[in-house]
Length: 324
Image (cartoon, rainbow, N blue to C red):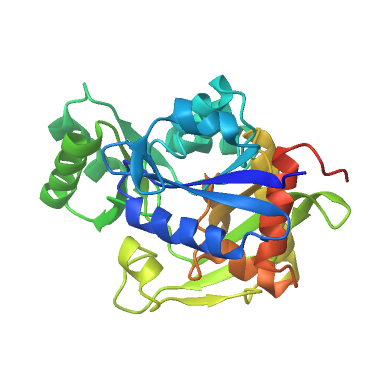
């Protein structure tokens, strides 16, 4: 009897292509060979699928797979597009379904969901394509303390995020992002300690197992946990973080709450700022990075969960073979 055939999707037509390659490599290297047959499925920057080094199509690849681990990040991978494709072909896969993925990827919808459940989140200004950005920039200068955070509404991994202050820098940051992404979110700049907390479904006898929060300490030259310091090894990541018990408990509670409020599956990781005024929810990652530098694997290691065991667990979750 053949083993379970697991396709590993990596690459993709997003700005996080290279990070996804690293995530995919980590999955392919660590997926237990005695239980699964891994199939490396590379998607290039133009969206063409490849297997065994040759171009192919989803229609050719997917019927032969028992499950898929989605190692993609950003657009196409986290916004529900690839999930809809897998659903059409009836292939089980890891992570959130297409609808929950599309909601969680949209930062404004996610923030509103957090507010509905009583969580603090930075106040924001949503700029849509038809918005007069000159008027918006003036309004932001009047209503927000400077500097502010300018970010895309639907990209991950801190892509396109900047910290700017004053009319001209704010206007230019908005204009540049609007041209690239079509919709922009401007948030108040929250000063505090950065934290992230992950959850995994049906692990160790718990319906939703809470991983210890990680404290993220960017290097002094970085204004925030930006794309560069996220992957260059210069950021100090402490797990368990140096939070009080009440802070840690609240971070884990909020990560669990957002996982459930957004209707996510299998695993997720939520980001926060811990301040004297309280804990501010920032966003939830439905497919957090799984590279050697990524935060979720470090949280798993801190509680003695080996990465290959985690990969087995989420494949079994996708196949419906795990009970609490």
